[in-house]
Length: 63
Image (tube, rainbow, N blue to C red; front, top):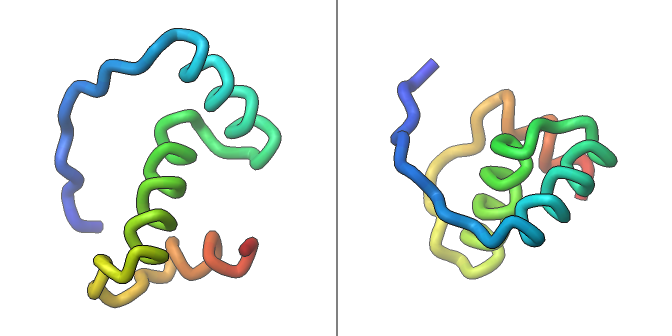
């Protein structure tokens, strides 16, 4: 597995709480759900040109 870039992310507590609830509904961690949402937004904007990994292909089937 390729290493992932780590960085601090500051979010409004109410936004984070909503993301946690949403992630729980989707059976994901908050971190995984944030990454999923960002990846989806970047892909929809046509800015993601990388090949989909096997882990991501499972998530893309949910759309």
